[in-house]
Length: 265
Image (cartoon, rainbow, N blue to C red):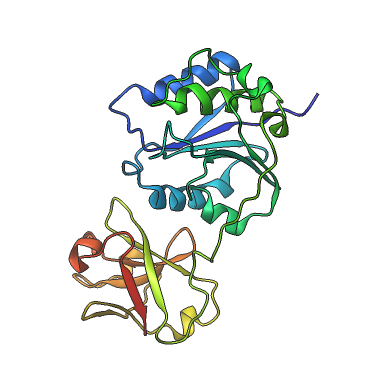
């Protein structure tokens, strides 16, 4: 029998005000009693696939080997959009095929990818008799994750498919004139960019990030080194360059939001 998974990770935009997250966990626990369930976050902005993709990328690598990681940020729920299962050297991911896995796929070697077919007999047998068109998290993703934990093989749930992350989501060039993007603004107002700190020249040649008419050009190593009232550059915990302030929202101060463009100087 296949080796069981170590745990299930959950990332959604469901929030905690309603019952959705609790019901997903109840379904998983009912199928696979005692399984460890780790909440990545359920506070992704409603239907914000790009934010979910970043938060998933920043989190997945810390999971135990062979985890089943379920990501449900799904504006197309109930439509003909695909649900995919992707296996890498480390983990198995379940998500709608809408870009939610793009950052992970750029970084990880895919060993297997399956287009989940709910009409397939082997899949249908592990789903409830009635599948709600508005709550696939409960009726599709949760039971699939639980059965994968128990040893169900991904390839039994549908045909093989191809997944392509497309162009790099990160800055690949360090010379002046290159544009960067705001990937995420966290709850402290720190502005996470798509500039990797391991890009050659970032720490030695990146003099400033320009937003509008403002230049952010002071590098710091930690928050206590930030001068009062000044926006600075720092390498954040995810290994990306961030714009930060001490005890103040850099995003609000600079008027920045997710997907805004920055220019390297």
